[in-house]
Image 1 (tube, rainbow, N blue to C red):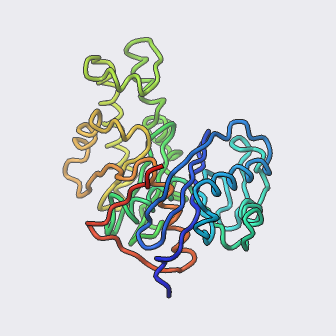
Image 2 (cartoon, rainbow, N blue to C red):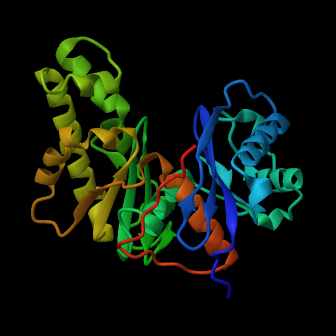
Image 3 (spheres, rainbow, N blue to C red):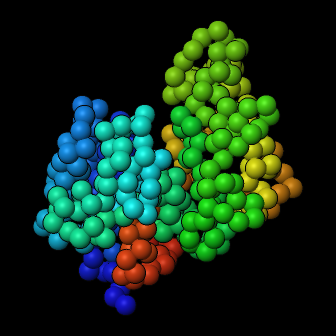
Length: 311
C-alpha cells in the first residue's frame, strides 16, 4: 500500500448557491488554496461540469496532476453510482451521472471520481483532521437552514445500526408534534424571536444583538435547550462519546451552548465545535477519496494542523 503522501485529489463542496474547491493532499489531508464560485446562473448539466472543471484547473489540478475528485453534495443523490436524483435543487442534474461526466471532462476513468453526502463529509473532515480525531463513536451535526447529521464508528460513517436514525438523518425524525428540524434550525431561531417581538429577522442579525437584546438572547437559549433535548432523546441512544457541531449557527455557540449543556447533565457525552468550520466538508471529501481508493491510511497527531495555503 502506498502512503498517499504523493497523491492529491480535487475536492468540491457543493452548496445551495456556491461551490467551493481545493486540492486535498494525501498524508495529512492538507488543503491548498480554497476558491468558490456561484452556480446561480448555471442552467445545464454541461455548464455545471464546466464550472467544476474550471474551478479544478484554477486550484491547480493540472500542475499537481490530481489523481481524481471527490464531491460533497446534498441528496437525493446515488453516491455509489454518481447519479443525481435532485429535482428541486440543481434540477438540471436529475438523472445525470456526475461521476462519469466529470471524469470524462478531466480525462479520468469514472472510478477516479466519488461523492458523499455533505453532512457525512463534514463529519469525516473533523475525524480526519479536525475536532474529533481518534474518537471512537461520534455524531456530527450541521446547524443551519436545516439540520444535517452523520454517525461514525472507528472513523467510518454508518447509516444503520443500534441508535442510528434511518440513513443517518435526524432532520425528519418525528419530534414534539412535528419533526426535529422544526426546533433546531434557522427558522426555529427566527420563529422564537418573531414570537417575542413580532419582527422577522435574519439569524446573523439576531446573533449580533443578543448581548443587548433580551429577546435575541432568549431565542438562542431556546434553540440551545431544544438542541440539548434532541441530543438526549434522539442521539444519545447511539451512545456517542462526542457530538461535534458545525454549520453557520455553530459559529454563535457562545449564545446557546450553556443551555445545551444544561440539558445534557448526567449524560456521558461531550460537545465540541468544529475546528475546520467551512473547510470541513472539503477535507471530508478528501478523506473519503483516499479511503475509497485505498491509497494509504493516516492518523494525524495532535501537532498536525490543517490550514489553507494563502490564496
